[in-house]
Length: 229
Image (cartoon, rainbow, N blue to C red):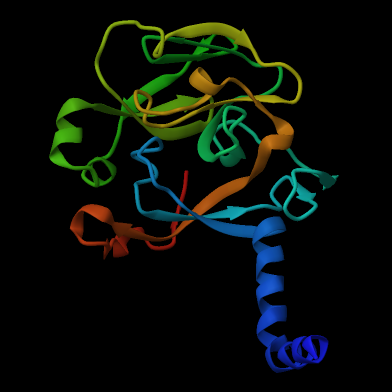
């Protein structure tokens, strides 16, 4: 009797069940959208942004695992990626700063890649003005450029300390050094260590939509479908 009931249930709802299974597999292995709950990637990504992640950017994995079926690319400098923290297995989103073979150092928030200093230029007000007045007052905002790669960062003016100065560190094979754009408020490789290649789940490329937690979840329409850089 129970078997007949289960069969009848499946027949009645098979369309919905198949759709759900396909969507779950799609989000696990092909593409996903992730809510960003913290400000570690400000000013690039704000709390409340829903970020689209391409899980086929570098490889194909078995759904619900980090096992590779095939691999065709690797993360490169400046890309924003999602990965599982080696500390607690939480899914994080950060920017790739060091790739295998790089020598990375930081001196009072000045980044050095292979002994070459990053250059810094003024960040446009369009990006800065997305933050509240308190954050704008307490931080400095720049474009950080490493070669032809340029991306926004924010940091507090302070002297050298164990968080804004490290290295030089040579990144080993199959390891990556990740930093948040919000340099003084990011749980990244300075806290959790280097990230292995198999922990990286995909490349974030677009903000699908965004809601403002401080304004009764009002949508930030100017951030809809905004490409990340």
